[in-house]
Image (tube, rainbow, N blue to C red):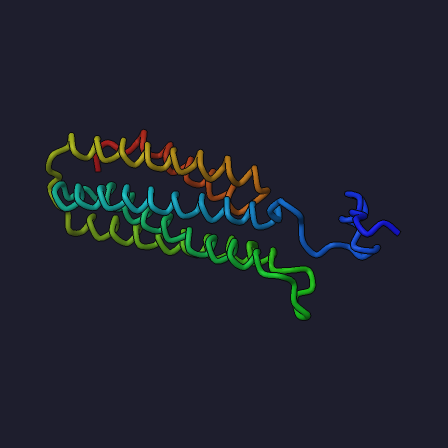
Length: 195
């Protein structure tokens, strides 16, 4: 027997007939996809938060209820990143005895939470709009309202493109749906000129 015998590539990867529990020189695709999902969620949350904060500053100056509703909506959209983030982190966990197929279905629960967050932000916006019917405020600096609406359009469209692209890459229905929701929000900015 040759003392300097080196196993062939096929022998090295066969593990004597046992399936390997890790990969050699590569990263687990599941980790890659969840890392990419977390990256998309993180930056979309940052983008929506910045958009909402800038719009909130304009709301204080202009007293625009339509812009206020849009700002509330953007804060709500930024908050939807939290359940998505949790879902992607949970998806990285190994299957357990109780969850033998893994934790990928947590994303379905995240989708339900996202819908509830959007519903709550809609209720808040409706309340503010109705209250202004009985206690109207004079709108100031209409040009600032228009600029803020364009800012909202741009911020939401950029977030939409990011979420949809990454969601399709990693086959995340929740991320794609959230992206189309952001795009729908962006389109409403074309109508938001004067409150």
